[in-house]
Length: 91
Image 1 (tube, rainbow, N blue to C red):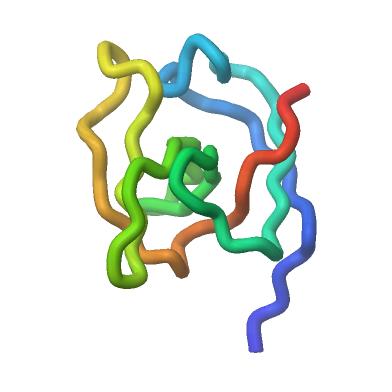
Image 2 (cartoon, rainbow, N blue to C red; image 1 turned 180 degrees about the vertical axis):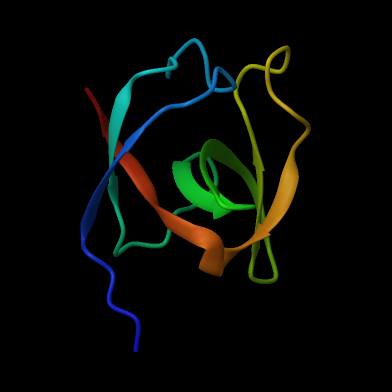
């Protein structure tokens, strides 16, 4: 059994979610609830923690994209198990 803490803290490291999230912003995630379409999540991909918005949900996978199309890479599908948590606070 894998234990997850209910809350995690992260620092935004890119500009793909501007104008709402900026590089250097701090965010808190709630890790015990399944996110849905429209939620901003933190997930682990290729050893990095990324912040993106869920655009679609299908068959145990999320399709995520950054809000800033000019600065974000193309969207991607990811397994629900890769999600760390839903962003609940920016500070």
